[in-house]
Length: 315
Ligand code: TXA
Ligand code: MG
Image (cartoon, rainbow, N blue to C red; front, side):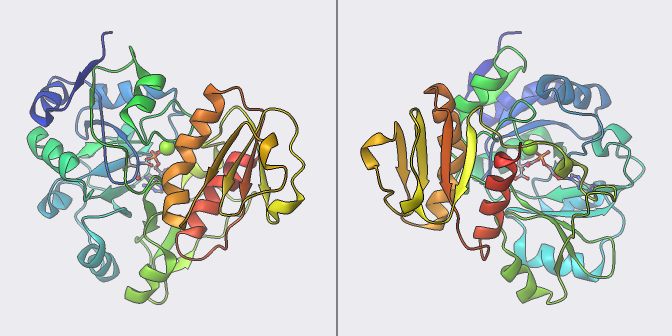
C-alpha cells in the first residue's frame, strides 16, 4: 500500500470515510484513527500496529456533543472533569453504548473518550463527521510517535495516509481516568497531572497495579515505549561511568561528558517529556546500546514521565 502524505484534513478525512486508517497529530502524540463505528476499519488498526486485540482503543471526539454517540451515562464526577479538561490531554473511561462495536473496546463494556485540543486534529475529526478510535501511531511496543516522520518510519506502506502536522506539544500520552465508579481512578498517568485532577475532585486516586490482578487498563500490562537500547534510570548523574555507545537525557551535566555519543540536556520537565520518545528513536537510529535517563520527582508531569521511563527500562 502506498502511504499518502498530506497537510489537508479534508483529504485525510476522505480516507476515513472510505474505511481506511489514517495517522494524525494531537497535542500528546500522533494517533492512528479509524471510524469508531466501522468494524473492518478498526481491525486494520490492530493489523497495522501489530497490536494485541485485548487492548482497548480511545475514542476521539471533535466536539462535546459527540460524547452522546459513545456513552449514555455521564456521572457527575465525569461531567466535572469534562467541564474542566475537555478539550485537552485527558481520557475519561465511561460505560459504552451498544452501538459502539466490541472490537473498539476489546470487548469491554466501557469506552475511553477524549477530545484533543489540537486544531488540526479537531478539523480532521470534524471533517470525518464521526468520532475516531485512535491508539498511538507506532508499531506496538515502540515509543509513541511525536513527529510525522516517526509515524512514517514505523507505518509506511501499512496505512493509507499520514496527516502531517508539527512535532507534538506534550510528547507523552493523555491521562486515562476511570469514571465508572464513585471516585475517579487514574489508570495511566499523563499530561493532566494528579494535582490538577485532585483540584477538581479531591478523592481522585491512582490505580494500584497488582501484578496478580487483571489489569484495569489492559494496555498497561504490555512492554511499552521501549527503544532497542537498554534504558538505565539514574538519580545521581555524577555516578555514571558510560560504556561505549552510551547516551544521556536529563537536567544535569554528567561526569565523563565527552564519552557519551548522544546527549540531551533539558531545561524544564515539559521539555524532558516533549523530547523523550524522539530521543529514544534517535538513539536507536544511532546504534546506541545504553540510554541513561535522569530520574525526576514523581510530582506534576514527573509522574507520567517516570512511568514512561520505568516502562522503557523494564526488561
Ligand atoms: O494521548 C493519547 O491518549 C494518545 C493519542 C493518540 O490520543 N492515544 C493513546 O492510545 O495513547 P493508546 O491506545 O496507545 O493507549 C490507550 C490506553 C491503553 O493503556 C488502554 O489500555 C487504555 O488507554 N484504555 C483504553 N480504553 C480503555 C477502557 N475502556 N478501559 C480501561 N483502559 C482503557
Ligand atoms: Mg500506545
